[in-house]
Amino acid sequence: MAITKEQVIEVCKHYEDPELGIDVWSLGLIYQIDIVDENTVHLKITFTSPTCPFGPEMIEDLKQMIKYKGATKVDIDVVFDPPWKPTDELRDMLGM
Image 1 (cartoon, one colour):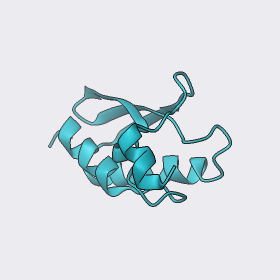
Image 2 (cartoon, rainbow, N blue to C red):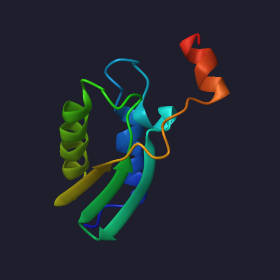
Image 3 (cartoon, helix red, strand yellow):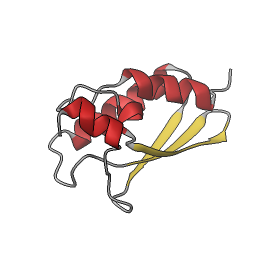
Image 4 (cartoon, rainbow, N blue to C red):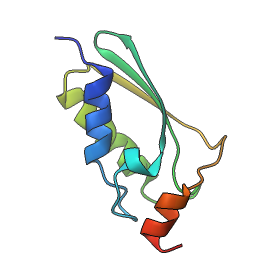
């Protein structure tokens, strides 16, 4: 069965940034989701900081979780352009 964009979004909504304790979808760290074919997913993501110590762990966790949903291949590109910027609502949640 083919994986859907909605399934990938659900994974992102359930995966919390290890430092902030908020899911990566709500944080706005997911810039793009492409279902290349029925079993291949391509993500473009960013981190809250270019020096995020949990970056490699986050990438591997997301790959495994998306594969569990049915993808056979998951490519994740980490980009910093545009740099991540929290929304005003998120800034309030984080007490910034």
